[in-house]
Amino acid sequence: MSVDVAILSLRENDLQVLLVRRGAAPFKGKWAIPGGFVKPDETLQAAAVRELEEETGVRDVYVEQLYTFGDPGRDPRGRVITVAYFALVPAHAAREPRGGDDAAEARWWSMYQLPDLAFDHAEILEYALQRLRNKLEYTAVGFQLLPAEFTLSELQTAYEIVLGEQLDKRNFRRRILEAKVIRETRKYREGVGGRPAKLYRYREERRGGCFRKRAVWQAEVNAIEYRQR
Amino acid sequence: MSVDVAILSLRENDLQVLLVRRGAAPFKGKWAIPGGFVKPDETLQAAAVRELEEETGVRDVYVEQLYTFGDPGRDPRGRVITVAYFALVPAHAAREPRGGDDAAEARWWSMYQLPDLAFDHAEILEYALQRLRNKLEYTAVGFQLLPAEFTLSELQTAYEIVLGEQLDKRNFRRRILEAKVIRETRKYREGVGGRPAKLYRYREERRGGCFRKRAVWQAEVNAIEYRQR
DNA sequence: TAAATAGTGTCTCTTAGACAATATTAT
DNA sequence: ATAATATTGTCTAAGAGACACTATTTA
Image (cartoon, rainbow over all chains, first blue to last red; front, top):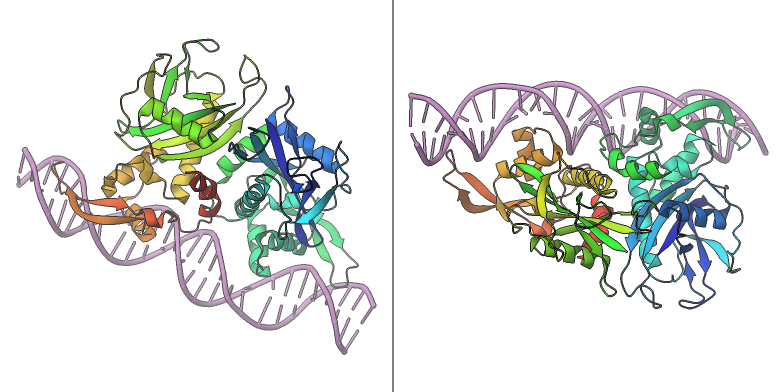
């Protein structure tokens, strides 16, 4: 019984995922999402969080169960069922990747230009991207990809990178502000060459807030994840 | 590694779930959702379908993976991780429940008046109901609870039972018809005492159709389930 | 003063929701 | 005729999307 974690982050103006190169068969030399076996006394979520911290050094980030993959043929060694999670790591929060205990190679890859992947990990990442895109519109999960303070332009860029499309600046700002999920600080981002932008913070207490107004999803979608945090 | 299946059906003008009474410890005498271990060579979905058929005799119904529960304390016998599924059985399709191989008692219970449940099965059913309600609005899953031909009134009643609220008849019909997920037959439901109602059928080929127009969810939500059907 | 970035308002279309009268059948 | 059920349309409010100009800073 294993967990695999798709660790996503915004890097280099791109949505990237942390992959490790397998040092042993099967799929030796291929890239894979980090994973490992669940210890006897930890929850599945705890196992995912542990993997995440081993790879990135970060704790207390957004982690959500994605789907459980268990087709008999997915691992040539025999029946291995894996619970896939995805994690959102704020920009610049992760340390430089180093291999795990087995000194394997590890690096970030663009979600939009992936290498050949081991096992069914391509399917897992495809599903993770779909889930993230949906949740971006229907929940306030986007802030998990940014540092604690951010400008509206940075937030919009984050949305655009994940959704893969350009957004209208005025409509975006209206929707974000009407959702009341962020609040102004008194600080400004200066020295970028241009008018300084106000810095905003996510309002943790309005977690239920939702980017699209006509959404009914918060209830389910957040229910279990937050319970297990 | 086990699968548990929340088998839901419309019965007696109510949303009901099939439960079995446990004949052995732990939780002996308590009610539980049917489940069992995954065989070495079957997919998780196949195991869920097998459980479903053992309990109800039906095949080829809607089955969807719900969530994987694996807290170390959830089974007193030790670490048991279970993948929860839910299944939608059309009204009157299931045979009368009988026990499984262990001759245990089995019966339908209202989702709105459940007995004390074994393990974390109360949590699983709570989550199943949330998921079903959400999918009812954002996908064309409601038809899975009805026989192949149904009247608009029957469909509306099904929605009302699951959602737990009254719906406006004219708005409901408008939305369903605009979604183009059903088509008229030339038949009528007669002899009920009143004007005969047109019978409709679900349009399988328009599966992506969606009750709420402003929904973006079909993509993800159906992706994996349909792939595994 | 030019270049770069931030910030702001209105109009239109679509969808959701509220709401009541007529039509067809069986008894 | 009455009871039961089926069928049909309009108005209003809210949200989503299209669209262009002004403001503030640095070089």
